[in-house]
Amino acid sequence: MRLSKKLAAIAITAGVALTASAAFAYWTSSGSGTGSATAGSDSEWVVASTTPSDAPLLTPGGPTDTINFSVTNASTGHQQLDSVEISVANADGTPWDGLGNCSAADFSVGGADAGDTYSVSPHADLAPASAALTTDTYSSTVSLQMVNRTDAVAGDGSGNQDDCRGVSVPLYISAS
Image 1 (cartoon, one colour):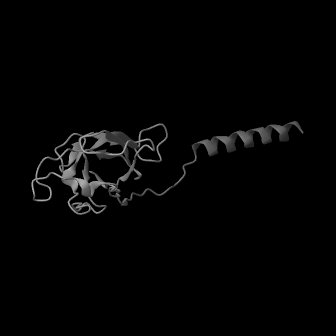
Image 2: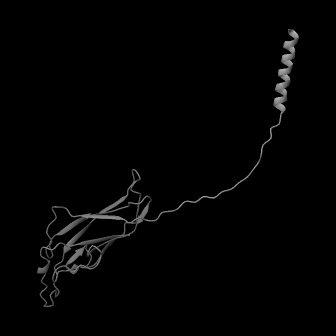
Image 3: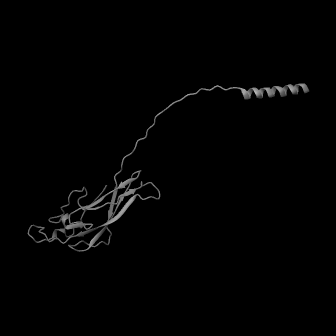
């Protein structure tokens, strides 16, 4: 029995030695590929405004209303807000003529000359609305005042602003 144990040990040792020195064959290759992604585009700003419920009624040369407005980035990426323009105008941005002789020329926005557009340049990088802990909205205020016109509103030199009584003055806010 001793001899067979020795033969077995020699056979195992020889097998291990052959396995350790055995070569393995394999293929080599190369390859390439392509891929792509599509970039999105900018999204429209979401613009909103509110007038405090306790705002005073506008009268010629009287108090001003403070209008709160905001511009929100609703896109999935950062967008640069460079300019906000506010004017007394219709919802589509066309000039507002009001009633009778009442028009945008009876009101000043942000201290601009009556009837002119008020502009602010925030130059703000607004993060995507979905980004946590970042700013996605620019908020500010603007004043609205009824001016005391002394020019010939009705063409008779009276400067009468009676047609502005009780009107709702529309503001148009444009962000870019």
